Amino acid sequence: MTQPKPTKNRISKKAASFTESVIREMTREAVKYGAVNLGQGFPDFAAPEDIKQKAMEAIAADHNQYAITWGVKSFRDAIAEKTKWFLDLDVDPETEITVTCGSTEGMIAGMLATVDAGEEVIVFEPFYENYAPDAILSDATPRHVPLRRTENGWQFDKDELRNAFNEKTKAIIICNPNNPTGKVFTREELEFIADLCKEFDAICFTDEIYEHIIYKGERRKGKGESEETKHISMAQLVGMRERTVVVNSLSKTYSVTGWRVGYCIAPPDITNAIRKVHDFLTVGAANPLQHAGAYALSLPESYYTELQKEYQKKRDFIIPVLQEAGFKCDAPQGAYYVMTDISDFNFENDIEFTNFLIREIGVTVVPGSSFYHDAALGKTEVRFCFCKKDETLEAAAERLQKLKSRI
Ligand code: GLN
Image (cartoon, rainbow, N blue to C red; front, side, top):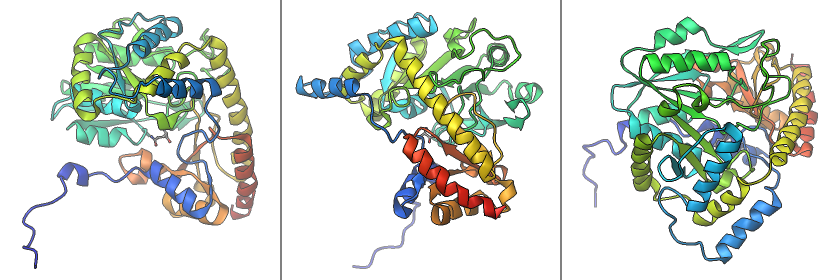
């Protein structure tokens, strides 16, 4: 039978207006070409044995049906306790925590719960690529404020940020420590942002998934900060707890990115709205994995110190490798990414360079353009991640040697 001619767009304008994730696509490319994957930010080493054991025990103990929509009670209690000792914040697990399917769902649920069409959301650029579709799906109008590479690391211009705020500003998204730049915002910068949020009655969405990955000596040398490697949460600043949505997850801290267990901490009125959105998006996150999460969040401080040390070693290995291979980059202050400048290789753009790197050199990265609203802004950059086994990083280092002849 012949089909009648279509009279409607089968794809919504929203879905048509963004592409699939380039970060996730790069992992498929890595598999296809057998390239070492320094693209998508997930560890290729095992998750801690004791945490895996707790997940298996939870399945054996029949925690296999829906959990409470906003999260297993013991997990929410553990989140509150950990937030108290780590950030010294009092959080009510009954009214201020929503467990989500990863921080990805936390961020989009948070935005859907708070932002109306026509309202503006400020995003520092380069940004973690999810924030762009998040803005489209929640009808927000994004306002981009550049982070620029300087001799003192990645910096924003205070006037530019102030000028981005106006009466339509509903929220600002920050990612601290930052993906993809590795920037760790100073207390002074956070206070500047906080003051603008208060002045313009804006919410702050703060993605703090890398809170435990901050490198020694890298928190703003010379600024007299005492908490050298200690994370500062936006929610700790005066007057911000009541206007901040902290988005976090088990993924990076416990090396379980595939478990998809995250959480939002927000004041009760916002939490109430996030819980409703979350309920109808996903009902809930995996029940047994939340039980394992309750255990993970009760681990002693030594676990986090070890994690920090391990990543510090990996960072200190990869940076000179990249610099010697011809990439311009500085050591990140936090998180596990390096945003590099590839202009010395003289390629047409970041996509051409990435294709070459995957196919000819055998290393996968993420093209810089996927972190900018305008592809041209990222055409001389690619992002490496280094949350990989030592042997993976060594294999990448060996392959990258071949690049020297290209400069
Ligand atoms: N946050 C990781 C990255 O930036 C992984 C993102 C994802 O694929 N969910 O690479």
